[in-house]
Image 1 (cartoon, helix red, strand yellow):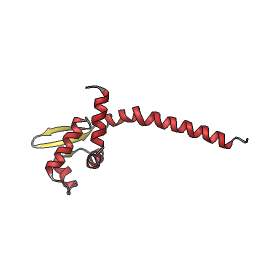
Image 2 (tube, rainbow, N blue to C red):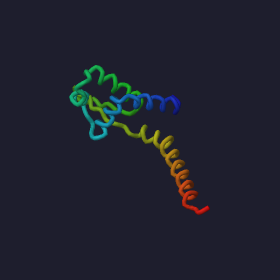
Image 3 (spheres, rainbow, N blue to C red):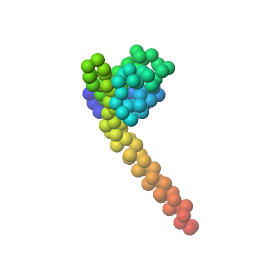
Length: 109
């Protein structure tokens, strides 16, 4: 799978607010699927599992079987890669533009 295809999966996974909320919950600590269902009372177990599947396919969640339990861990590396590719360079560009604007405004004519 190409990097662009992987990025598409990550953006798709993060496009849904429930999946972003699941990532926020898993950021604090790994949780079993049952624990996630308890923390998402407005969503049935089947829907939670479907959201977890999308997150897993994007590489954002790693599932670990321990006996009858399925522990879900957040893997933030794909998000970091998106940050490095998109957010970091654009933030640097924006800061550079703002510095030039500030210099022009503060320099007497």
